[in-house]
Image (cartoon, rainbow, N blue to C red; front, side, top):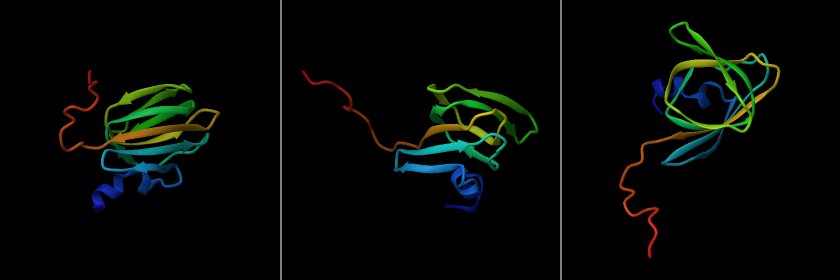
Length: 118
């Protein structure tokens, strides 16, 4: 892993917040946990699917100095585009736990997969 990648990789910079559940050539699955008042370190993510196991309120701080509130309702799943360098702070009263499925580049063809034969 290059130094530039490792300095922005969530697992490398915040190993106490991000735990790798699966890592293969197609996806990396992370469990993310942030207790009230905690924050993680500056990092980035590729495009991903998120599933909120335990919901709450996060404030996302961007490198340009702006921030926004992100309400994370329990049981929701959504597609999230890549997010530029940021860190999150739990501004709510409950721990937040989210499973992230980061999508890697899929090389090759998926031709014929998922088709039903008659």
